[in-house]
Length: 105
Image (cartoon, rainbow, N blue to C red):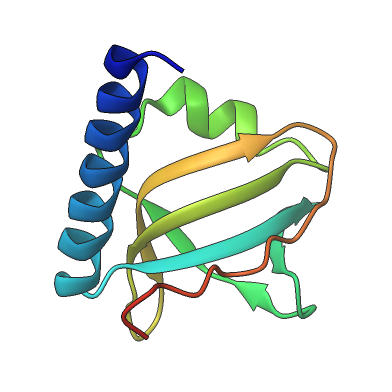
């Protein structure tokens, strides 16, 4: 690899670390769920209650609300509902992800 490529990879890795630390300091929660009918079911089989942030486009919410859509979402945990601030989804695939172990844990 060239020196420029290594420098870019190093900078990218540092940026990811800074973002992860910022989210940990905000106490961000991450959830995984599959859309079944009108419910979100997590990888343990429990029903999740979500409200979506105004920053998430309504067309995206409509798109992920199709049965069979697997979603990884993050935000703030609530008593009655969890507030989803960001999400990543994969259509028609269920693939629960294992949480990575951070170096400082």
